[in-house]
Amino acid sequence: MTRIYSRRQAFSLIAAAAAAPVLLPGAAVAQAGDVCRLTPQVTEGPFYTDPRLVRADMREGRPGVPLALRLQVVDARCQALAKARVDVWHCDALGLYSGYPGQGDGRDISTVGETFLRATQIAGADGTVQFTTLYPGWYRGRTPHIHFKAFIDRANVLTGQIFFPDALSEAVYSSTAPYSARGSKPDTTNAQDGIARRAGEASVASIKQVSDGYEAAMVIGIDPAAS
Image 1 (tube, rainbow, N blue to C red):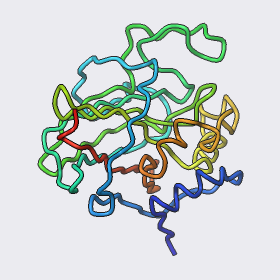
Image 2: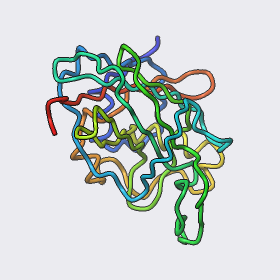
Image 3: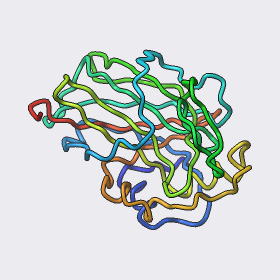
């Protein structure tokens, strides 16, 4: 029987920082009706750029486990926010962001001039954007995550991060190149990551395993009246 993991169950895995590698084969699709709360604002981090790359496939040939990422932008009443702009960016399987020098475990790798794993989409009538990307890698001091910015207008921008169960990350990293070249475990779990703890359950993606990788879904709740 296929097991379904809800958002709350996924967060319980994070809080427990599970050590055993457990795959998540069940479907768990985020629904706006369940998430009429606002998504927490968290730090942008040091690696944001705005290349305005309007595209769905953001991989640019980078190796890794395929990840289909679906985000829905809604307001506090759970109404879809059409035409919201969503920027997404994250590191590759080896923990490198595009466009920056001084990266890698030895801080000697530069990706200046590159734009892999960055993209922008404009939400449709249902408030949804979709990206074709890779399961994120990790770097020192942070748990695996994906960054996003949701723009309602110039004055209303939500900056957030998307998190994944530790057990799933460990399973991916231990069994798949090039992730496995860095070992099976990040140096920081979700429970040890202050940003993940502050973001909480609302920033945990629902995960579904598919034939060639994973699907991740999350609802982004934002208040258009805020400034």
